[in-house]
Length: 364
Ligand SMILES: [Zn+2]
Image (cartoon, rainbow, N blue to C red; front, top):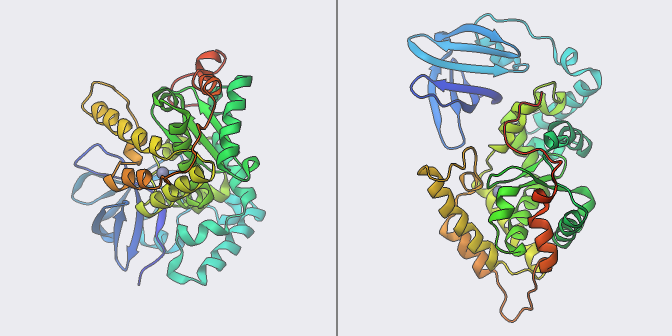
């Protein structure tokens, strides 16, 4: 019998220093630790030993496996808790989340229980009310530690681009952050953050528009909440963020979507670029240039560091081809922004001296 998978778990395998985000899948007396593309185990619950409690996290080891660690945070489902060795007691869901939120949790849980084993992010995500999504986004992102860049003309250019790519731009909050990394992320509450490093690498506003449209695609296709549930679990989504938003944001920046979700976001991007009469060819060549840069970063001469755009969005030949092919012959394409607007957008972070720069989200 397969119990629901528990998502709020991290794992060291004892062989490498990599801290892996995993899901715990219980099967009888055994369990597996699942990553997106890999499965560790099976391990026997009988071999698990309790090691320590660190803050909100319980740390477990495995008999006979030096350095093997499993870290669980938040309230662990009773089926899983029953299998684990003695540990500190958790308060019930009601104590932890408060009555109102717990009611939502139970409603969601029973709605999802209809689908029994389909208690999965794909099923749960659409059930999360948009007000929860919005609150979570605000709590997680806030003002991004003062890193958002703003100038009147830069803001106006960005606003124009967003409005050309989405019919309900008022639901979205798109920002450029003063971080010299090639990255772009979609976060809860309709937020998209373009890193200044990515904007500066772009040679035309059309290239930025393609990436932005892709991230908006993740929001419109509801991938963000799915990934958030997978990454952090229902408890965090409903319980909110209690003083650890830095770590959560770091997690979110490293978040990856399934291939299927990436393909949907690309399809969304190509569709809205077409509607806006922005050529998709620029996006294809931008992806190609970024992947070359990312390659040189990996070999050490560029030092892009953590979670670059291309590590979460590997360029496949199909992906580039799809963008190239989506061009419509004879269609009258026009630039996403005028050259004056593009200059304002590109230099917004340089102009805004008040915005804080850099990475490192220790703003607890
Ligand atoms: Zn994506």
